[in-house]
Structures are given as structure tokens and as C-alpha cells.
Length: 595
Image (cartoon, rainbow, N blue to C red; front, side, top):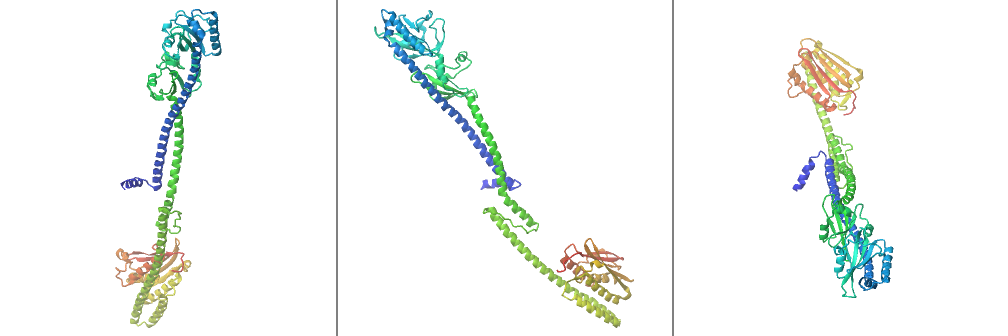
């Protein structure tokens, strides 16, 4: 659980889920690619060394078999000659006739002519008798057989032939070739049966070289041969070994019980594959340079690096694709939420064909938006009904209020015994009441509202006589604009009772109407006593009005206008104490005629 919270905390630091998924998947994929590449490179490196060791081992085993076959053939020659009666007669007989010598020479010549790989062959007795090649070569007078390994050991060896390591043979005067000598002791059967002579064959050094060169070991690999004592029988760079320009780890090879030995000297290290012969006692060693193996390994590693780079690019593209695929539904859901947040429910549904958590969340969101939209529509209908109800309630407040003030005027004139004016005012009031209390239309053309205001002003002028004059100047272009009923009359009434009533001189009330910035503007202007700032600030507040009930009319009109047209429309007042007041009514210039 703690690990999950820790991972969630790390992911939470990203600015978006897409970035988090991209980063996490990329890290995982790149880590997997790097680990797989590293393991593959190590495995390939080890495989190259192992395969090279097996390959070289097979080659040196084949070389050993070839050498065994070759030496076996030479041993047969040695056995055939050493057991020849002519050899017994020539080396140990009391009298050696020319016929015996010629037969041996012919036999030697036959062998030499048929085998270019044999440099010398001959027989030597401890009694000083000898026959070498065709008998014509001069034997080196300085040759001391007691110092020749191939001679002494052949006499001492109980059975079988003796193989020497490569050496310089100087049995023939004027010749010092590199040879490998196979020698075999010859028993004197006419005497004690002891070994008293030796047959030898000098094999050309090139013969062994050709056997070793039949199989190649890589581009820089080579093979060499050691005898039982660890002496070098053959080496392709033998001269460099003698000059110490090249070295081989012979002690390690001789002591090793394994078929493969590796020396660690960086790129100069070597991989030795060893094959030992029970027949010859020789050890054939195949050698490969570690640098060559590393070159193959480096080539493989370069391929792995290239593949890894391509896989990383694929991993990045896949991570981006996966992140976008997983977060695309969330982005659509987020965009839809933003539209809903701004109040745009049309097209807010998110269509995602998925059965996972995101699909479930999307379905829940769609259900929620539909529910919210239904509730909002229901609320709009309820608010509309409430607005109409409030509008009718406010409308009902106007009728008794206006009636009270008009009847007050009639009473005042009746008290003054102005009966004709009472009759005229009562008739005018009746017409006004029929219009004001009519529920047929809540919205009327502006022209009807102007006529209604004109009738009201006529009544008021009859009441105030010469103390009140009025002018009505409304542009014909706005007369057909719809206007809610009883807007002008309360404002005119407020102007009379707040401005003109207390004016000592004659008062003038003007009603103007015109278009401005796409809106219809009505102004009620009086040159009355005006209002101070405190009174002006409370003119819309029905709870703080001290002038009869006129403030209720202004409040009523203001609220009705804003309910119907919106908050940007309504009444504004400008007033200066002792100068007059201007009430400005602003409504839309183009409207629907229904509420």
C-alpha cells in the first residue's frame, strides 16, 4: 500500500496523466531494452568464446588425427626397414657383400623418391657401420652420436619408435635442415638381442607445417605442437620464439587438465584449445587471439546497439501512442467537462466504446450531465413561472397605488367644488383603470404606454392647473417596440411628487423617446427641486422611502424591467438639488413580443 501511495505521489508530480503514462512506460520499456541488450551482449560474447573454443577444439583434434596417421605411416616404414634381414646383415654381419648394400640403397631410394617429406633416412650401428640415403652423401665427421638425442634415446627405449622435437640435423656434411626425427632401435639378433643400432627418418619440418595448415583457425589463429616435456615440436613462428619476439604460455598449457585455457592479458590475451595424442605423446594446441574474438563480439555488440537504438525509438513511439490512446478518452471527458462548466450542455455527451473504468466514468458523466440539464430546464421553467407570478404580483401593486393618488386628486378638486373637472378627471380615470387592470396583455406597444402616460399627465395637469406643464416628444421609429405595461406612469408620478409638487414656480415635465446604440431610451425630465445624493441613493429601496408610496412605484418598475429584460437594462437617475431630475429608461431596441 505504501508503495502504491509512493508511486501515485511520483505520478502526481506530472502535469498530465499522458505525460505520466508516457514517462513510466518509456522508462519500463527502455529499461527492458537495456537489460535485454546487456544480457544478450554478454551471452553473445560468452557464446562467441565458447563456440570458438569448440570450433578450435574440433580443428586441433582433426590435426592430431592427421598427425597420428602420418606418424603411424612413418612408423610402419621404420618397422619394415629395421626388421629387414639385409639391415641385420649390413650392421651386424661379419662380412657385408655389395649386394646387401645395394639392396638397402635401392630400398632407401625408393622411399626417398616417393616421399618428398622425408629429408634423410638411414641406419647407424654402434660398431660404426652406417648407411644414409643413397650412400653417396658425406657424413659429418664432427658428428658425435653420443650427443644426439634421437640416437641415444632410441637405443634406450624398450619398444616402439621415438619422436623428437624439431631440431637442426647436421648428420650430412654441409647441411643443417630443420627436421623432426623418428628413430627406432635395431636389435642384434645374431648376438645378445640387445639394441646395437638405430634406424632414423628425418621428416622435413614443412611436412608437419602442411599438416597443421590444412585447417585454418580464424583469420589470425594458428596451431603449434608440444612434446611430452613441453618442448616445441612445431610452431608457425618458431624463429620468432627463438628470438623471444613471441611467447606462448607453455607451462599453463602443460599443467592444464582442461581442453580450453584462456590467458587474461586484455586484448592481447589468447584462447588455447588443447588436444593430446596417446600415440605420439604430442599436444596439438590451437590458438586464437582474444582481440579477434572481441572484434567479432564488438561487431555483434554494434548490431545489438543498433537494434537497441531502433527498439528504443519504437519504444518511444509506442509509449507516446499508448499514452495518447489511454488518455484520449480522458481528454475528451475533460473537454466535455469544461464545456459543461461554461454552461454549454449541447453536445456534452462523450461517446467512448470502452468497458473499463474510463468507460464507466464516462457513462456516469453522461448520466450526470443529462440529469443536470433536466434539472436546469426544470429550474428555468420554475423561474419563468416565478417571474411571471412576480410580474403579476407587482402589476397588482400598481393599480391600487395609482388609484389612491388619483382619487386623492379628485377629492381635492371636489373639495374645491370643481365639479366639471371632477367629472372629466373621473372619466379619464375610468379609461386609465380599464387599461391598467386589463390582464389581456402584459406587454404593449410603446405607443400605448405613451398614450397611457399622456392620459395620466392630463389628469395631473387638471389637478395642478397652471403649476404643471408637460411635453411629449417620442420618435415614431420606436413606437412599435414592445414594452411591459405601466412603466412610464410610476416614473412620471415620482417626478411630480418628488420634484414638481414642492416647486414654488411653474413646473415642466418632458417625456422623450429615441434610439441610442441599438437600445430604445425613454427619459422623464423635470425641472423640480431635485434630490440630494442620499435621497437619490435610496430611490430604488422600497424599505427606505419617506415620500408617500411613490418609492414603491420606482422600485416596482426597476424590478419588473430587470426581471423581463435582464440586469443590463432598467432605470437610471440623475439629479441636482434645485435644478431638476432626469430618469432614463433603457430597453432593447428589438424584442420578442411575448414574455
